[in-house]
Amino acid sequence: MGAVASVLAAAVLWGTVGPAQLWADTGVHPVSLGALRMLLGGLVLSLLTVRPEGLRSLRRPGVGRWLGLSVLVTALFQVCFLQAVERSGAALATAVAFGTVPVVSGICARVLSCERPSRPWWWGTACAVVGIGLLLLPGSGAHADLPGVFFGVVAGASFGVYIAVTKELGARGAALGTAAPVSVLCAGLLVSPYLLVAPEGLAGARSVALIGWLGLATTALGYLLFTRGVGGLSAATTGTLSLTEPLVATVLGVAVLGERPGPPAAAGAALLLLGLVVVSVPERHRSGPPPRPRPAPEAEAEPAPRRV
Image 1: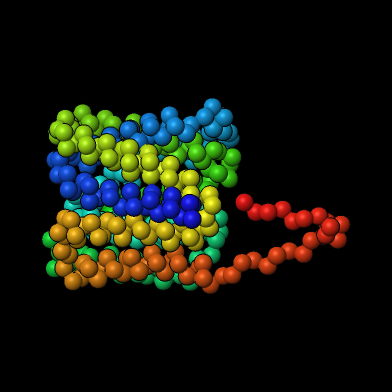
Image 2 (image 1 turned 180 degrees about the horizontal axis):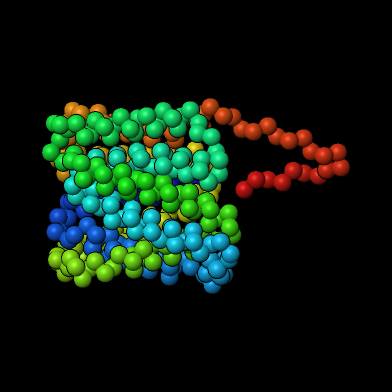
């Protein structure tokens, strides 16, 4: 239950990113906001979690190029997601972004690991494609425009690639507890020159409070909670709990921000969320626990080790 509570709390924090951005209404450019979020969150995470042995693991053969790709897609996700929120609203932007994630992560698994897509993945992909198409129909809503949906799709694709890159880093011996904070901090440094291009609104009190919330609560604390709990849960359970993030964003968008998408947009968002449920939930229920292997004759007298 402690692991479930940690992952659930992290998902709730992440679900507040879009609503907080719109509610604060600071006038800060989304790219500048994303840069400061990554710089602050990445710095705090690095101070709390990075250790010398973890840094040494990033110098192993084959790790460098995947770490560089991790930095690029981390920066791309932050920049595109915050712009999608500004253009399409918190509810629709979050639905588009996270409805796209399973599609891209499945494609990456096919390309990198030759994994065959499952039937739930195909259904989830169909829901994502039709849902995004509905968002682009005329009359979907004042905020459901082509650039906003595009930024949301790119953000989701970036996160899907990030998942695949994280697996590759782990397979090559990189310490993921170090790779993730380093990726966030380096992504912030990569985007930070934009602060000179669009510094408007950064010095306001609401801007400082928003940056503090996004950097410290949704990035640093959210990551710490997620990593604390994810090790004790199955992938299916983690995926199901992560559905809390778009749910929180949708509830806050409607209840707090007064977002009222038109019927086509509402149907599209519902399909995107349905696709997430289809991909995340059924696999856990369809497949039972694997059969326990019979011990070898010489080991039958020894107690079986407990799985942690």
